[in-house]
Image 1 (cartoon, helix red, strand yellow):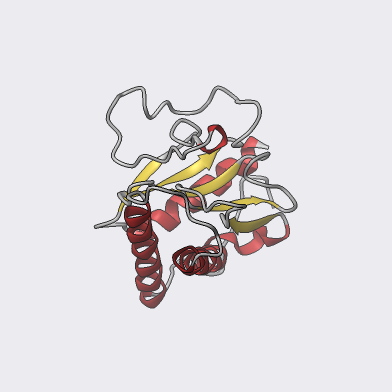
Image 2: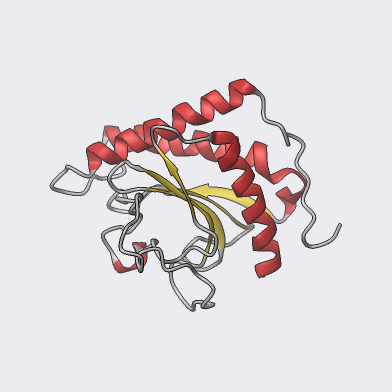
Length: 191
């Protein structure tokens, strides 16, 4: 297998899976919309956070089944859980086995802090050096999905190499899965 070749067993996800993905995606977006209005951060142990963590876990499972295929030995799917405080920008990410989003490039789904949707694509590490290949999404001044969190290590708007926005009302799950797959190919070339 070449570095760029990745196959998936579920290249054409069943309709039911797409409906389930869309429901999970929209539920996480609704949570973000409500959470953005909260004056104080939530603890990961709070009931709404526990519910969305379960949704993120479900999305991670679905993404892994639909996208990883032969790459399971090299990559794993992880998701935000919060440490002390639940993040304002929840995410699901494909990372090299044993790595973290903070220290390694990843293929990420970062949910907009106001519930408007998500930004998906190959993302540079949250902490550390930058390759200079990222797209400055905020440079244009108009972004539909804001994925900058509260802390300095949660500023994701300009961390993506191939960002694509997926909006809450019309998330286009088939297109999202396709973009994840393309981003995984890029991740393999990036390393």
